Image (cartoon, rainbow, N blue to C red; front, top):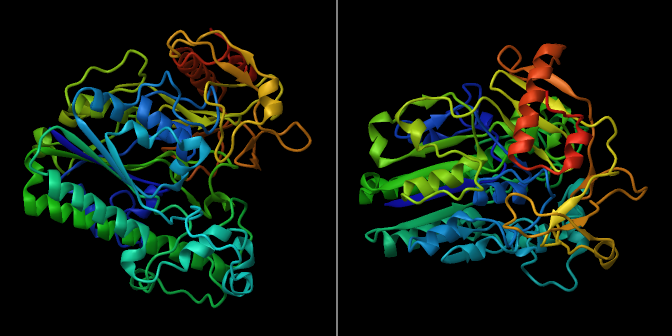
Length: 501
């Protein structure tokens, strides 16, 4: 058996015509793949954002209840490493610069081999001791001039083949040229696009004209929408052009499958880590605001040669990021470790069936969110403070830094968790704001922190919170069971006022 796993970043499902008739973004190749694959309509995130989502993907477990952004832990079961241990070759081609940072450094080493494309976003790639700051100040909108590394990197992207997504797919084709006739391998094609910065070659950008005439504006700040109408149009057009570029290069992969008849013996999975707000709910991006469906409900499309007759069908039951790991192991007929909570989706490829009643998702330190497919409930603590909240880890790094000596000096040891292989973990305070109270994620505090219930069947855009204590109590009972299954720390139950009924 062989498999190709395409992982994109920050893909809003409403950008794809396969998920939204209202989309004006050109994505003919995702639509083309829809005819061959099985499309999942209620697929959700787990832990957020980028690297916590990848830990869910690797391990088949929710991790936002125990810590923030961080590496794979020594006790984590990682699917590419399990493949490698069982003599199934795993290779990743990616431009995801977070793998170079302290908080992501243990992921790509789990594969049999890896190829990392340099220069994406703020990757510390090209060395310029004295960059031309005068040029940057004139060329870029003032809201994004702090992205110095991006402005430096962009100078070296002249031709289309210099851009990262083309390089990722070229490298993937090299792997396929060398190994397509071999058996027992997984290729992970991971593009940072369409994550910001929304920078695509000219021929894609010209597809989406706007009236904006200002400096480069392709990196929305994680904040409320304050831009002018022309600025909003420019940001959205830049996002659209990037999605269309990703679609075209994904189409080149489909062409390769056609030309070499890989459909007979190769599975193909396509998904993203999370979505992205493009002004919906008057917010840009993710992280700070509630986890609306534009962030939480994400695309998933799976082709498996054994179920090729099911091509073009859709599945409506609840699935989640944590299901990808056991699905990949199941594709290769490998046993799933006992610590895995996710479910293999191979059982859904034959026919739609319920594999869970509900699921939870969220950020460390923010709300715990739950959906049963009909409703979504954002459960925030009464006070968004860091008191009695802890991070549990044996890998004390965050996104781009190590925990400080002062933080480590205050560490204690916790008792083992059910998934920590008998190991006690460091128990550490989370990162907080300068006043020592507000919890922060990537240097930003959370806002709009009210618990709210939405009926997503009647109110899919989540514009009108609903008051229904019966449904809330039912979802809280479900949430309690999910926390028990995940072996959440005791303080999490207190924080969200959850007790066994």
